Amino acid sequence: MTILVTGATGRVGTQVVQQLVQRGAAVRALVRDPSKANFPAGVGVVQGDLLDVDALRVAFKGVNTLFLLNAVAGDEFTQALIPLNVARDSGVERVVYLSVLHSDRFPNVPHFAVKQGAERMIEQMGFSATILRPAYFIDNELMVKDVILNHNVYPMPIGGKGLAMIAVSDIAEVAAIELMRRAQAPGKLPNEIINLVGPDTLTGTEVAAIWTEVLGRPVAYGGDDPSGFEQNMATFMPKWMAYEMRLMAERYVSDGLLPEAGDQERLTRLLGRPLHTYREFASAMAAQ
Image (tube, rainbow, N blue to C red; front, side):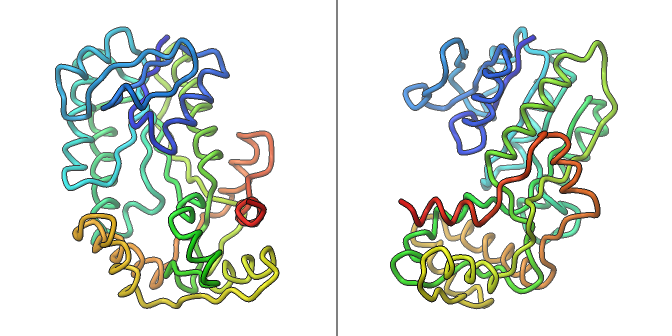
């Protein structure tokens, strides 16, 4: 029983690998640059990427379960479809796919539309799969912590409808639980969709209020206009990606990213503990 983890050196993938090792799994990681791979002892490493068919064929040998994580990229859809095809060709039927909450509701946001397409392919190709649909990552705030801490402004234009923010550590642990469940099953299990949400659904104003409390000084919400957000993102990422982030922010403002009834309770039962809160994250950042 070997589990292949893609995106293994990223924020989510690193923790998925750690969680799997803690559970006694045999883990193999597909990485672009092995020099950046700092994994626990015993984790196998294959150099390559999601478009490297030869590397994928090597990586899938002896694997029975795939964790598929696709980063936002111009060719993200191809990066999802190629490994799924190679997995099927290699006899790998069990998949845990990291999608996004409400992937079917935001068709104008490219990475939402891509993930909806990949979900459809997984279903139609007959995989035994868990689709994980995370909401907004609390850990995304690391990108703007300096603005919050040094300028007393919460700059993310997330609106007033609310986002169900979840910690990456919770995402990774649920992923590991599902990977182990599928990998150890005597046969193919029914497909499932799990919404990954945090314990709180927060607006921009509410997030700013949390920072005000933990820092002990006023922190203002920067507002719903995504223009400045797009401009700031474009200083350290491609302009098409910054525009995509703007499109996502516009949908956050207009629609929010809200949990379904029972989502939090399901995750609490699955983890056997409470979900991590935004306030815990903010307090840790303030303490540093």
